[in-house]
Length: 119
Image 1: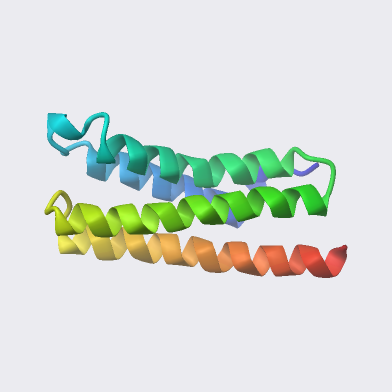
Image 2: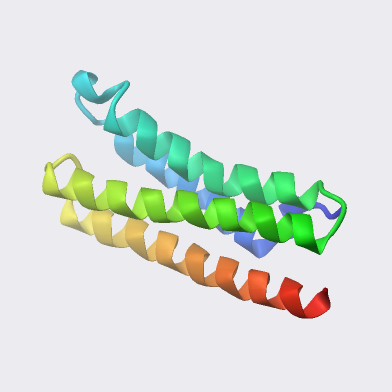
């Protein structure tokens, strides 16, 4: 078991979630239970799964949660594209948030690989 708050990957995931919440605040009311909710759920799921994985018994379990986190990151990456194409977010916000997602996905892949070598 390790403290998830000490992991750089978790801190970046948390920053991304805060940015998604801030960016989706301006979505129209018709999207409160639609794309806005999905984006918020996917973004928070990234950090949630990292935290949950850190509370497990070992690297095998942590890897499983990291894979789920990776799935949520991929989901969010698509939702950001959709939000841009629907003109719910600007091109600038899309680029900024997508860059954060891609960085987290790279970090997740690297951590999964590292945990494989430790096992």
